[in-house]
Image 1 (spheres, rainbow over the protein chains, first blue to last red):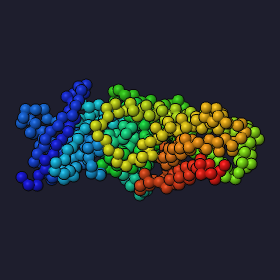
Image 2: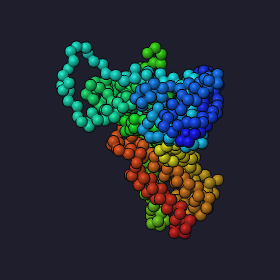
Image 3: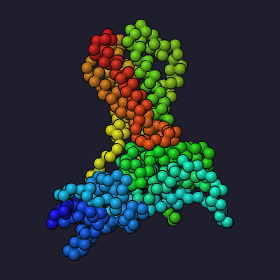
Image 4: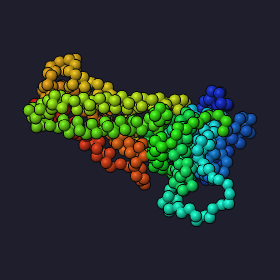
Amino acid sequence: MSGTMNITLKVWRQSGPSAPGAFETYKAPGISPDMSFLEMLDIVNERLIEGGKDPIAFDHDCREGICGMCGLVINGAAHGPSKLTTTCQLHMRSFKDGDSITIEPWRAKAFPVIKDLVVDRAPLDRIIQAGGFISVATGGPQDANALPVGKPEAEQSMDAAACIGCGACVAACPNASVSLFTAAKISHLGLLPQGQPERYRRALKMVAQMDLEGFGGCTLFGECMAACPKGISIDFIKRMNGDYIWGSVTEAPVKVTLGGG
Amino acid sequence: MLKFWNSSVGKKVVMALTGLVLVGFVIGHMAGNLQIFAGPERYNAYARLLQHDIIELTWAVRVALFVSVVLHALSAWQLTRRSWAARPVEYAMQEAQVSTYASRTMRWGGVFLFVFLILHIGQFTLGWKWLLPEYVPDGAYGNVVLAFGRPLWVVVYLVAMFFLMLHLLHGTWAVLRTLGVAKNAAEPLQRQLPLIIAVVVTVGFSLVPLGVALGVVR
Ligand code: HEM
Ligand code: SF4
Ligand code: FES
């Protein structure tokens, strides 16, 4: 058949959290270049199921780059070779006929493998729970224009708010640091008036939580920014550091825990 | 205080502040060294100034530098351990996308600089005989000429300065971000001033061993 590709996949297979994993090689002939990467995996899985084998487990949901569920390290790059895209937005035309593609899960102590390519990203939720919110007193809503927000602040806040929580920054970071995610979540609130009252406590708490979860420290490699499907800038990490330093001077110490939540 | 030191951001801030102290020192040290091109009288007078006339100040600076190096290396070591522990299973394939060579050599380059620092102080300040058998106290100029009369030492110093350049190239760029004071940038990884600082310091330092090796200083 003309116009299709033959691909060889090297995929990480691991039957459970404590099972030892290993790479398996699969031939994937007859792949259309117009397929998305996940559609290609769907085809491979259908063939596996037809052959009575266990399909490859991978996370996905929206398949349009907004939910943050998908995430694979493809040939050594988180979310694959295309810039500013999630794994679900990656297309097979980014590869060549005959290519061999290595697929691995996000690798971090804080992201244990659940099965095959699926990892547990609950630490990201706990970082949000530690301080990624604003507290509002109940009552009638304010007029929308009662709180003026400057255009540059609004823009920057929206840039930070584009983070979909996929965890690619952790996966791509040689230190397995979650600083880009945490910084984005601290900044999109801290840049707006509504986020001011808790701004420095938020930074203290979310940084304390990310440390507690066992992520590495940031050394400003910049790999997170290159992998991020939403192009979140490492400038937000600088902002987080500034908020953290000021919070350490002005705020009482904070306490965070791993459990419950 | 303890909470700050125990956090990954706090430790990095300690590394940044002590790094700044060291950057200030290397710039001053480099400038001072260049006086070797003004001849033995001038250079030995400079050494005498530091070692005798303002020895109290010299000691204050020494203590500050010693504390800085210890804190810098200690936080570097602890953060490195933390990062290694954060990824127990390595990737089979990981491609660096944008990180600089300088950023990826901070740790091992730093270890090399640490070893170099001990050799360097032993050689010119403490006068360890196995490093420089002909060492003469208060004879700074002659000691430098003797040491760099040996190609081995010229090479060791030039390699060390290469690592210093890489360290400064990343360090002086990163430090403003660690401290949260850099300006937002469209291309945050790009840097100009750090490149200038790194090259000037490295070339300035390297002129001394090169000057001796080429016979300009004798
Ligand atoms: C004693 C041996 C040394 C060791 C083990 C060492 C190690 C390190 C490490 C691991 C980092 C962090 C790298 C990163 O964030 O990517 C760092 C940063 C830095 N180092 Fe050193 N280093 C040493 C000596 C020096 C010297 C002599 C200077 C000054 C010329 C210096 C200046 C800096 C600066 C300015 C930073 C940036 C801090 C930041 O990232 O915010 N270091 N060092
Ligand atoms: S910062 Fe980017 S890479 Fe990290 S979780 Fe958010 S969207 Fe994903
Ligand atoms: S599946 Fe939702 S972002 Fe990829």
